[in-house]
Length: 411
View 1 (cartoon, rainbow, N blue to C red):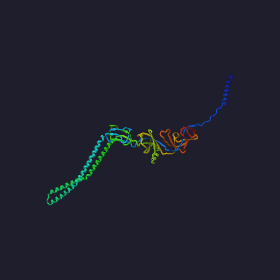
View 2: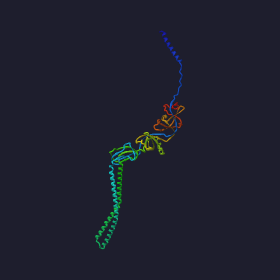
View 3: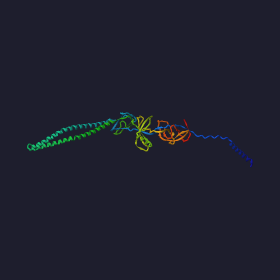
């Protein structure tokens, strides 16, 4: 083998490697860049400590404790229906009419019974007066008959009269005694007969009043200003006694039934017992309506306790059965701060900014802070002994927030 042919490639390879190593060792080195700490751009708010009422948001349903159901006073036919469901009504307005021909005959019949018994009582009074007058005469006739018997017996002993004449006088005395007792019984029975007639008259008058009341109620008239909740019959319908005709409710005095959370119901009950009346507001059809807690239900369940909030004034926008959202203000809490929901971390921490860095603060969440309906940023009410007036608080919700993190406030 030719040694020159082997040595030459090896030599060239060695020279190439040596040249590469020399070039690499003599190349210029780039400057080392310093490590910079990341800075997060955030938004903040200034803490304003004040005495603020926590707000509990409740969902409730509108009810009316004075909802009225007009029922048929008797069997009859509907002749007129003058309102429709949802229609506003005013006091004295005629709503529905039953056929009066179904009720007038009963009124006439009851009035006839009253007149008949009044005449019977008048007749009994005249009869009693006559019995009293005749009673005195009957007693006088009895005295005459007794005197005749004595006289005839004496004359019989002297043989001036026969025995048959004496017997006849005794028969006259016995008949007069029977007549007197009959008259006395008639006089004594007068009170019982009058009581019986008076009782029958009272019953007849009650029947007359009932018939007249049914006649009056055959016209369904509104007793208050409100709304028609439901019309349950139509013209021409045959209805039975007690059948529902129309349901009404007043526009004033409406209430909202809402479920108090189990964790807060004791506080609300204590407020009521102390004479306090928590206030609530609701936005209904663009109208801000105010309510007052007036009472709670007598029984609770696992979801909480029903509470009743009465509207402080009548509103044309409230309707029975409507679902509304209530904001109920609780007792004010001092040294509290209202913050956006985004400012709360882990359900119990806020971050204060000190010298451009975050510092965690443990806080107590009191509930919603309330505020104007439709506000862009819902707020929570919190407090902490570590919070100071004028503190700069983080409101941007950083996923990696921690104490010591460097931040820069964005105006």
